[in-house]
Image (cartoon, one colour):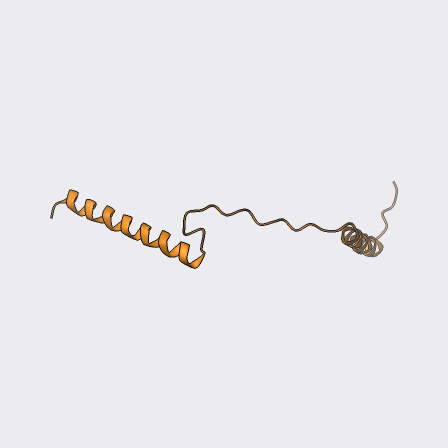
Length: 75
């Protein structure tokens, strides 16, 4: 077999595999395998109350850090 024939056989095999993947992807509901694009997942958003709790907790942490730090002298 020459190189051109080998390449032609490989391309044909690839085309058969692609068709099988598309067919099976449609059967199983796997849209990505079927070639369809998927939508980006929705981003999770934090509520205002949750944001306030996080801010309060961080302020408390910083207050504890600042309380442990030695006071600097003014020169």
